[in-house]
Image 1: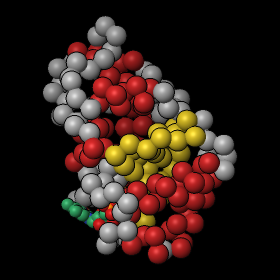
Image 2: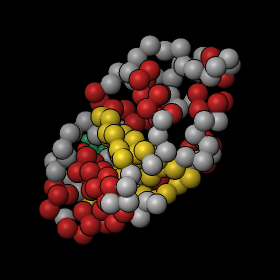
Image 3: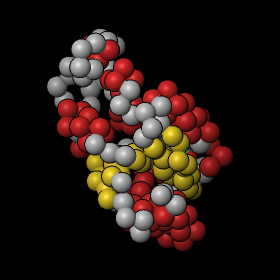
Length: 178
Ligand SMILES: Cc1cc2nc3c(=O)[nH]c(=O)nc-3n(C[C@H](O)[C@H](O)[C@H](O)COP(=O)(O)O)c2cc1C
C-alpha cells in the first residue's frame, strides 16, 4: 500500500517529523511504501468556498501547491496526518490542508482510504481530544477509516527522539498497518 505522510509542523526534523518517521519505519516492515510532504514547503491558499469543486470534474480551481498534492492524495491508500498541537487543534497549515480536502467530498474519491494522526504536544494526550475529534469527524465525512492516533508529550525541538517509549509506540503503530 502507498502511504502519504503530511508533515504539518514548520520544524523539520523535530517532534512531528521524527514520530512520523518511526511510524513509516514500522510500516515498511509490512511492505508499505511511502512519500513524505512538508506542508510548510507548499503554498496552500485558504478555501474560499467558491464551490467549483462540487461541479464538473470535482477539481479545485486554485493555482497553488495543492495542485500537485491533490494527485498525491488521490494516489495514496493511507494518509498520515502529522501535526503538533497548536492551541488544542492542528497547526494553521494543516487546517488549510484540511479545508482544501473539499473536492474529495463531492468526488467521493477518499472513500475507503485510511488515515492516522501523529501529534506531539507539550501537555500530552490529555489536551488532544479536540484535535482527534476534528480528524475523526473529518475522516467520517470523507468516508475514510480512522486507523488510530499517536499522541506524544514533547516540547523542545526534536526532544521526542530521546523518549524510547514514544518512539517504540510510533514504530508499533506503523507496524500495525496491514
Ligand atoms: C503556536 C503554538 C501553540 C501551541 N499550543 C499548544 C497547546 O495548546 N498545547 C500544548 O500542549 N502544546 C502546544 N504547543 C507546543 C507544541 O505542540 C510542541 O512544542 C510540539 O512538540 C511541537 O512539535 P514540532 O516539534 O513537531 O514542531 C504550541 C506551540 C506553538 C508554537
